[in-house]
Length: 79
Image (cartoon, rainbow, N blue to C red; front, side):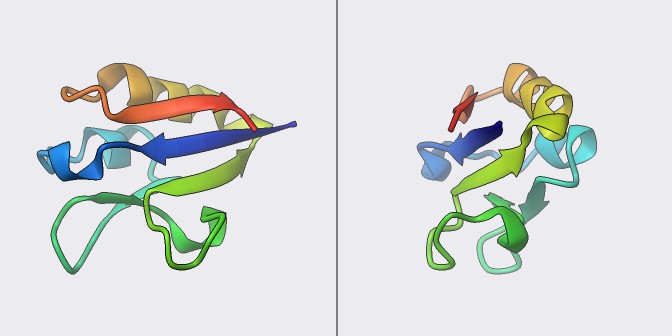
């Protein structure tokens, strides 16, 4: 099983890096605007930086990032 992970609305990211700290295998900070994005290897579309699919074994860290995001813009759901 895989999980859909999204950052929406990404414009609301305050770049506190909690998601990267808790789940650096899924999230990274953009060099362009300094906001969180999905690591390229997990993106469902190479041109969409805020949506990806990750293996089920990343569920715990993705959900920890979701629960700790101060702006509640990280969403984790079955793919």
